[in-house]
Length: 239
Image 1 (spheres, rainbow, N blue to C red):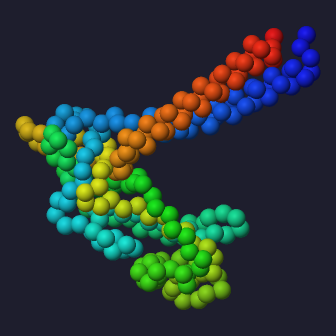
Image 2 (image 1 turned 90 degrees about the vertical axis):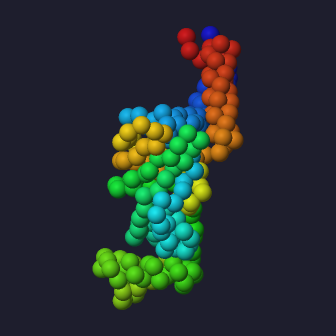
Image 3 (image 1 turned 30 degrees about the horizontal axis):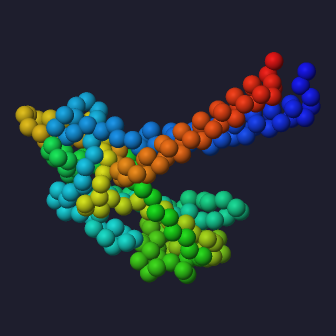
């Protein structure tokens, strides 16, 4: 019968193995999700994913925060309160655009589109620290929404004003960005072009980043399984 010290060492290996396995599942799952499963524009059919370069169709939007020309944007504002973040306001908009690959061009409908782009987060210590363009936009939203008029109860009036920490999460799709679009494919005739509806918009992850996630996930998962195997075979933690 294994001694208590041997069993303790064995269960320590099991614990470390399960921890490594748990740490590997996340990167592995993310890498598999980001790995290209796209088809070309010319071959897309049914519900499909295409990837390419985002191009302007008619006119771009102006991002209300950065002032850049964009094809889609979304931002959300949260306040740091009691050790947590409380969402207080946000805004989103998009215009139809074209995604172009080597086989053709697809017109992307943005009606009810899901915007799932790479987020950028900014943090500010109170509203006095906000850039002027941010403050102007947030004031306009506060004036239009009575529930957000005074995000700090000690402040009255139609202004975004607070002494709390502010987190701004922003997503922008700019002309020329690498983009992945998933949607229902509509074709009106022969040719490489199509229209995508009921869409989800995401940035295309660099291949190097995907490979790194997959490699990290595999290494951690294999190491975790190896530790558990050692615990079972060498320390006899299981009968």
